[in-house]
Amino acid sequence: MQVTAGSKLWIGPTDTLHATWKSQDLESGIDKTEFCVGTLPVGCQIKSMTEKLPNSTDVTCSDCHLNHDGTYYLSIRVTNGAGLFTVIATNGTNVDLTAPSLADIVPQFYVTSCVTNCTLVSNITGVQDDESGVRRCSYAIRKQY
Image (tube, rainbow, N blue to C red; front, side, top):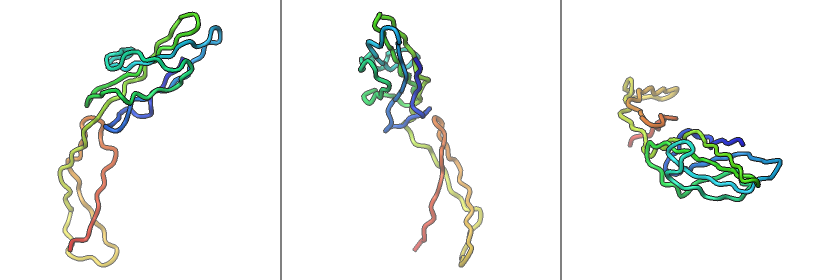
């Protein structure tokens, strides 16, 4: 059996835990597929083993209560017709429920007037996110009346 987590190492407040996998048993077939969610690999501390359709290949846990800065693992258990099973866990998915912080946007020089080919250069300081890092930082320019 092969299992992969969703494409994100970090998820935010509107995301859910997700995993996909491939499983097969050429001799006796797949009889049962289950999943659970834990704070340890192959652990079920957050959601106990829950049965899926036998040939399921993905799961999303939309009812899992996730805490800020926690790491969570989806574990998949597949049982064949002979009662033998395999359990495998995803790599940990981290949860970031806080926005990044931003200090100041400071112009490097002050421009009093500009007609054509104007350039604005600024230093943006204090952009920080201790958990998942900063993916993008941008600012807008507006005309002051």
